[in-house]
Length: 156
Image 1: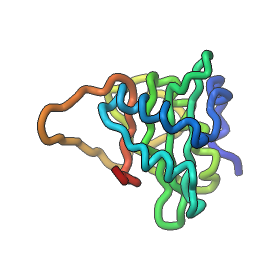
Image 2 (image 1 turned 120 degrees about the vertical axis):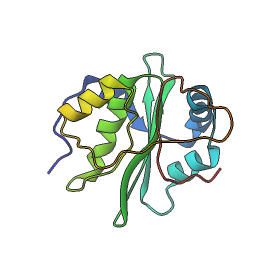
Image 3 (image 1 turned 90 degrees about the vertical axis):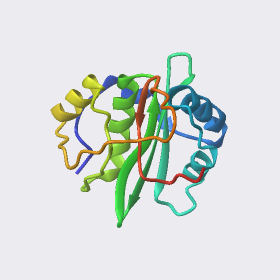
Image 4 (image 1 turned 135 degrees about the vertical axis):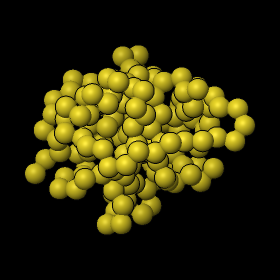
């Protein structure tokens, strides 16, 4: 059984992240979300436990316009965190990341205000399991792009 069996032309702009991508990933997340998690990116790329994967989406100019970290383990199959400039880059990252979950159903969190993302995922067969709200302490910085949160690894 292979992935979702969906063709999305931007998937060919997704590749496995390497250590040289860490600075660009940090700059992207700071621009989009106002945070950076350099230790998390390095941990996912190194993948010493053989359960993580880090992907990046490259724009036409080879600049990193998105990234996705996922975990595949008997205890948890999850996509995210994912940060991208556009919903199209997010879709390419999500679809490419699902390839490693053949026969499993990974969880991921999708911001409901991203209509293209939500509607495309429903078209691809995604279904709602839970609804989550978020809260912040202090002033909230609105996202400048797409940010799919997760519950891991959050090393700081």
